[in-house]
Image (cartoon, rainbow, N blue to C red; front, top):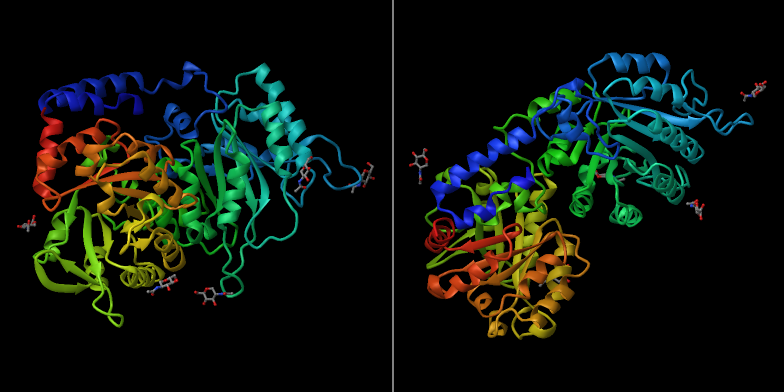
Length: 576
Ligand SMILES: *[C@@H]1O[C@H](CO)[C@@H](O)[C@H](O)[C@H]1NC(C)=O
Ligand SMILES: *[C@@H]1O[C@H](CO)[C@@H](O)[C@H](O)[C@H]1NC(C)=O
Ligand SMILES: *[C@@H]1O[C@H](CO)[C@@H](O)[C@H](O)[C@H]1NC(C)=O
Ligand SMILES: *[C@@H]1O[C@H](CO)[C@@H](O)[C@H](O)[C@H]1NC(C)=O
Ligand SMILES: *[C@@H]1O[C@H](CO)[C@@H](O)[C@H](O)[C@H]1NC(C)=O
């Protein structure tokens, strides 16, 4: 529905007109996107989106990977026939060459999972049968020898009949957790064969993995493994779905999360080893920390059914990855960051406030002396409140909240990160967490502020699963956000794998804002947060800066405004 965004219309029109236009456009979208009847024999690209195909077929009602269903190892004739008769949507089958690694090896692709290297079913026969159905196809190559001949068969078949459905090609091409020896399918050969022989597919490139119980090893996918895979596929034009061993995915989520942000053509297919002790909570964490269309679940029963029941219940508390974006967490309408609410912690807030509202809350954090714990400080009040206790109130709220921690100095930073790490280790930190400080670096070097590198290194050392929210020291902003200030901030943040939200002040933005947009362009994981409050000036002092940035983009820009300024800005945007 992206093409039906109403964001631009809305800024120009009054709210009443806006609603009318909305309804008209929604009706138009419905007409255009109506599911055609099955016998219309639509032409669907084999490189097309699996969820769009299943919607098109009327198999699922929304673009949600949880609704897709899988038949595992539909290899032999009887399994294949059973799968074809069932209501399962996608057939997954293993391909190898006949007699692989025996003296009798041929180059005939057959349907078999090692150790079996003979089968009553050839790939040719499998395709002949499956293409008569409407089921989706996932072929899992067990050796590089099988890839070339199989793609030749696919190509020949596609010139005979329309494939008319997504085709996924899977191969494990890199070493994954707990694997040291060279195994799997040669990566460059596999990817080259797909590009030259049959490129109109979704590629499913995986890691060879071994699961070991925690008593023996806690190893999981590393940042290097994920980066190595990304380097292999980053320039490919296809849709890519990364198969990930579900039992090891939660513990490596920061890396998978990063991978998913790199392209909207990427998804993850979770799979389960026969005896992997996967838990419901692991699956809920992944579900709650991703978009529904980004994850497929090839999971055994009875866990799958239990998971679906719980996951699709809208009244449960979410288990969100604290380093995830607030865009993903709050899902504001039209991806408009202006619709995310911000509050400043106030001494008068009671539990009720948190159950009646929702948004990001700013907590000013300081420590009294080197022996005390981090405290939340309140404006115009000497009272302080231990951070850990305050976090527990927020985490217990039934409404979605995220925390913006504005940290006074290095000591407070270290102690805050330790508190967060402790809550995370007991799996309790399930809301977005931002860490913000004014930092000194390059062209914005300034006495009395933390060194930018110290800020980043401390986060990466103690607790990295946050959004990093650096800002420039206020005294350097006399000429606004100049090219040099922006360049050096980008240089400071280069190489970070976290979400980063640059903190900008609306008054300074009014002086010079053009370069600020370059911050957004540098990475899909960068966002901007514009601050304005009465300490910085009256509403109109910040208005030119707010309008300048608002006219550039709506996605990935947030507005941390005090409540009355926020209302004035909303009124000026939506009713002008
Ligand atoms: C290979 O083929 C020969 C001749 O058909 C047969 O006798 C032999 O058992 C086969 N070997 C294997 C390992 O299947
Ligand atoms: C994969 O194949 C390429 C070229 O055929 C070769 O250069 C490379 O060493 C192989 N990679 C591995 C890991 O064996
Ligand atoms: C894995 O982690 C668990 C829980 O933190 C710990 O008890 C166990 O000793 C670890 N195992 C290894 C091999 O490090
Ligand atoms: C919170 O909501 C409850 C029930 O909707 C209402 O009775 C109460 O007055 C609200 N409290 C505040 C502080 O808004
Ligand atoms: C804070 O943590 C960093 C990184 O672990 C360490 O290098 C630094 O000495 C610590 N500073 C303070 C004041 O605790």
